[in-house]
Image: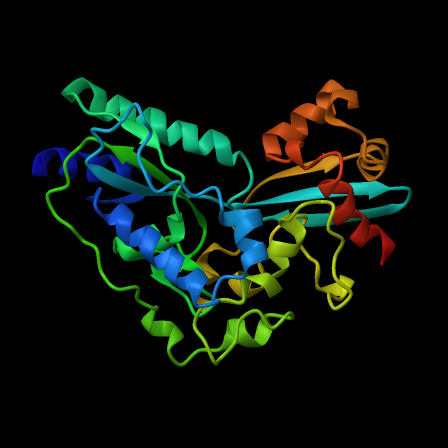
Length: 308
């Protein structure tokens, strides 16, 4: 079994990825920790219901033989997106975890299946708190901004999680750790405009984070205390990451520079449903992982930049 896991790790390394495997019993620990954070009031209940309630702390009904949890980190760059309306052109950033996220999950599942199926093992997607799993498994460490960092990747990666019937021979489960470099550094705290990163507690005030507000249900307008000038990404936020010393080697890593014309941008701002968009426009949104952001979320977020 050690040899199988060694071959997996070798396969990850050749593709620039990193991964960890922990016993299935750690499901209970993940669920317990999330519940404790909720009961202590450290996870905003509205945030949990909107963004975290999809967690499922049990294997699929047809996969009760699951013996382990796998978490795999895939290196991901940022993407530039340009929108033009009349004479105004703006270029925005799409953080590493958005573009083609679902396709990445499927690709990793296919790759794991390719490696494991010939020797009789299987995987299935897991809806788990991946950041917590990555830190507890020893794959990642927390930054002061509560974002996961991995040596050699910074925070420029996408986490994927799976159930597997591959036995775990070495349990690497450990207490969450903060990066040593963060202990005397407060750059992210000072750069966060919303006060989501504070000195009095380690856990991020996620309900204050720009990412929460520009990813949440499009029926919610931005609260009045958010200054429109703080927005810089179409979705998500990169402020605490782009100033972080741990990410300096990755800040020039962009792939793609998708552009949308005046006609396309106007359709977005009007809230045009996806099925009424030109095929070419719909294909570009699908590639970026933004198709589901229409008809409401994309115009809400985009309008901030054309109004200011």
